[in-house]
Length: 277
Image (cartoon, rainbow, N blue to C red; front, side, top):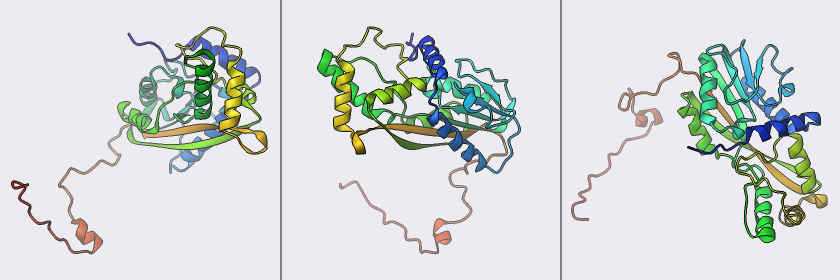
């Protein structure tokens, strides 16, 4: 039996706390980028749905859209939508393929899926400084920052979920903060603090965060005494399969030679006898 990655109760508690005084600028940035990507598609979507932990970010962005939380079982009707967006929550999913499969099932044939989640370079600076500080203070390590997927792995999830014409790309955003404690404050206001099921639930050593703050300032300084934090967003796109979509040609079925298309001469390679090698 596999252990859950996420403590869902803790995650919901963190998100409710964030909703009281939110700092959702990264969610808004992701929303705007997703909407730009939708506009690049020459199609009008009439029945969109959005999976998001913060519905207020999306409520005025797609009029008439169905907006649902990123629960393990998504409240989406099968075949009801021509566009499904999964917005900056997939990194917390215990079963990301299952989330994508549910989105695909909610799509009509040739419907579009768009998703965004935090990728593996997110908070790399914080991860490194916390690990070094905890090793120095307590002589060990504990899970404190969510492990996040790399683009090559996340792109493969689209195919595993049965989505056609899959595309994955990444954008890294660097945000500067006055110090570590202002960064942590923003993470709390986004509901992105530690909700790992395997996290240590004991009070951290008193010296841990001052030591982390000093290491952060030393290794990742910015102008005017500030520090930087990286947030990598990985964007996913795919389509519900449909017979109208382009299909790859069978090997050997080309009707024209590449040399003719390029206007060059074709020179066969000499035959090499490898028996004497």
